[in-house]
Length: 284
Image 1 (cartoon, one colour):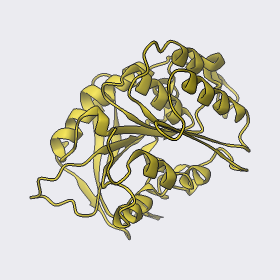
Image 2: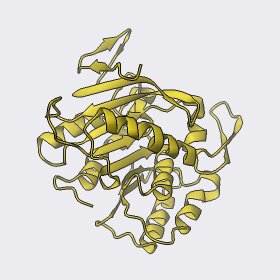
Image 3: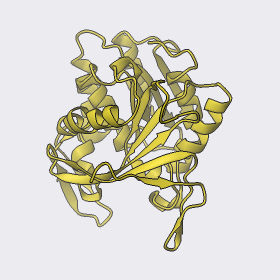
């Protein structure tokens, strides 16, 4: 079942929704997880020049909330990040190293559980209070023990941690930073956009504070100044610097003036994040 892959093109239309996928993108439907006990779709972007009979291997970036990163038809509110279009352009300009990008769909109702590093309470849109089970560590196991081995076997990846990235926004950014800290042997390059630092009375501060020896993580951290509590990201930046990260070396921090907490805002920061984490001669 997993070896059956759907291939998309720029003008793919299924039903009433028009898809906006660009480049060589393949979909693995209902990828199963024994660790989490559920399934999700996974989209894989292959860079220009990826050929079946070539021996070239590529770094890999895994992105949370995969519905939102490539395709307006599946994205929240119909606005995508445009990661596929941006990667295509930057690779062709030789502004970044060609890379494989894996968009991991969330599962809807399980998102708050899988992306939270600790148990905590959130108020839903229906004004109901819901407690998360805090499964970020288990979600990390799914990535490392189930999804990543499959991607490494199926595609020509550079499988070492120094060539492997993880990214997301909001709760997807929160789980990205948590997994990076918990599993630095698997992911060394992190995109942390507008992280939900407020979660569980700032649990991510406590997790960073527990770091005894700085792991080899290269981090893109940002926030928009129109986001509630955006100053919390500034404090997180300072905490990372205290732990040994160096600004503009292995940590880039951006405050996007007037930017809100939305897919459209994050889309504008994809290019700079890719340039920082995957430069043409990327070496960690």
